[in-house]
Length: 277
Image (cartoon, rainbow, N blue to C red):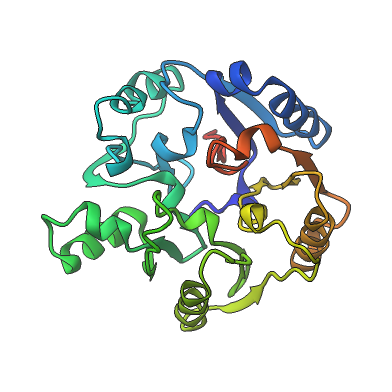
């Protein structure tokens, strides 16, 4: 599996630059600084390109799923559903296709595992669990680790919960929306990984954004961490620096206050790949 540690190219929907010019330009300046290529995707209908762009399994294999999430099925929101066919044609990428309904934000890639919430099972409820798992394992060429879906979080995306660090270690967000689900996430992850849990000691705390630091953009040369000009920013940065010591001096914050209020972070608004040679 092509993990974030291997990626050398970042893409944004052209809508991201249009709607959030200041934070996107600040991210691009950092990508220039760390010699990471970037570009903008055309033919898209919203800026959350992580969700509809394919999953890179190896240098040449990209898996394209059906992007038809339940939260975009009403009449008003259907216009935001992107079919990436034309976008991928521009990039000269011919993906492997599946009929499974998946969100890219629900894919956390480890070298030999993928972490997902069980929302993928619910959105493909016409197929048995065992069949969905078998299809996912065949497509991604690895085993699947499922986390429960906290239905109070509409999207059911794993990239607001956990990220792979290295080896057999993952970083779990400070999931302050529900202590019950925080404990469930920890229990399930500990079956497969060593887990580092993020924590905050500030009083009072901004619980609304505590999950979002885990939604960072990671490439082979730099990790760019969401920031919001609050006390937790520094605490989050220090914990991520400690979890990723091999990125020492290459972990940078960017204020994304104008983005987070729409429900996503830096991983959500980017699509990073190892560029096919």
